[in-house]
Length: 582
Ligand code: ADP
Ligand code: MG
Image 1 (cartoon, rainbow, N blue to C red):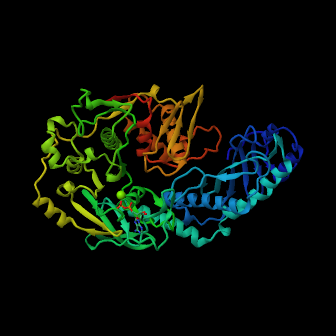
Image 2: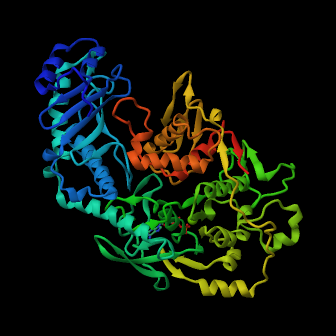
Image 3: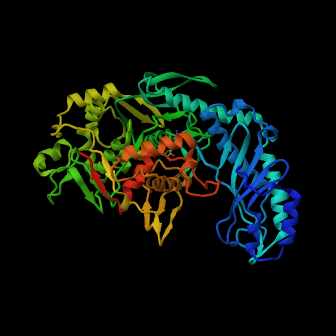
């Protein structure tokens, strides 16, 4: 914590008497709280005081010196364990608040204490920091008021009784269940180790035996209880054993690099498996069911997204000679079709680095995925602008090293191009590659439609003036849930960016874009990939909070998004202008 010169650290009794003194005064009197308080077991830093009881709550930090917090170093040794412990402590803090404090203490947000803790995924977030010397939680507190006047007594209860009790119950190691903490940290570390090991094993994903993939509902991401959920059992042909640092050997299904098809009847669990792979870029909390389902970190879900904006993307590998005569090597539109949006989504993923494309027939444009033999006979190649994905998927792997995992229950034309075919049968995978290949060989082949060879995408540089976080002279960056980013004058629809999982990631995306502008990375010269590299190098040094624009030490509610999702948001800005760098 910074020491504000000339101001001695004030004590708990100073705080109590201040709150007594300002009782009944106008809400602005709370500004006297700004600065640091030594409350004995911890330091309280009041970084920002809300303007009134209805405004967003005041920002505070509580910092417990490590000798008091007492966490064994082994729990935060190394960046993975530290991140896991920080994520865990934010959850415990939130749970403690819920347990100990349910009352509202006045008008508006009076009496509220909150921390930005996560859901099923474990993310690097700004809510909690664990250092050698201390543990710090960054929280929001609604300072109590009646109407607009200070409720000093309630504030005293809140800051000098409830808050200390929450802090003692969450940031002190001795209050925690040591087995729970250790299990959390070790689970995350094991998942991370599994993911790191994928490339060496030639795998794009791993699904441990016993994993529970289905969720309770479309709006409840917790696991479906077993039963009715059927735990995952790997097929013998793809069964691999992976080593983990804590759990030892873990056995499950390894999905090899190349082109993998997931087939099977409707309602047999194909999409559920793919969704688990999408989320496998993240680590999960113990009990999630997907703790040991891991996918290469750069994997991107690709889908059709008609209506989206596209700015100067070279979609010519998939779409050329449009009836409008538009040049698809520099394709822009305010209203993409199903197929053009899906093509743009692929090229944009390639542009910022992707090792695996994840595609589900449920959310794909049929004409983008395939043109079957009958259609080829009726509509000639000359009349069809689209080179279907089926004619590019092998090239993607062989030339660019990009694997694909594709759910396809409706069309057999992919048998010919697949390396591995997995059939989901009553939620259990079976390997049916040989049968599929035999069927492909027996039937009459469709003709291959790719003409020009597939090349890596042309890099693009975003134009700084087209990325504007200001609205009426003020920075406006806000997340409305996970799927909507308010950025300056724009409301960016991210609902089709399916690997975003947390509204604090959405917020962080907005902050990352503004940070890239402020730091001069987004300068009109650097390409999108270069900009992201620079931003993430800084985050690697200083944590996700480096992108925060807050002048105070409280960085706000931020969780780390992947570069892929930052790019996705930028690419969906309606105002975006790009220059291709040929
Ligand atoms: P598909 O894509 O093959 O049509 P889904 O993946 O959408 O099938 O799954 C159909 C339903 O079955 C969903 O409601 C899903 O939650 C449920 N489900 C998926 N996997 C399992 C499983 N392992 N055990 C029990 N239910 C499952
Ligand atoms: Mg499905």
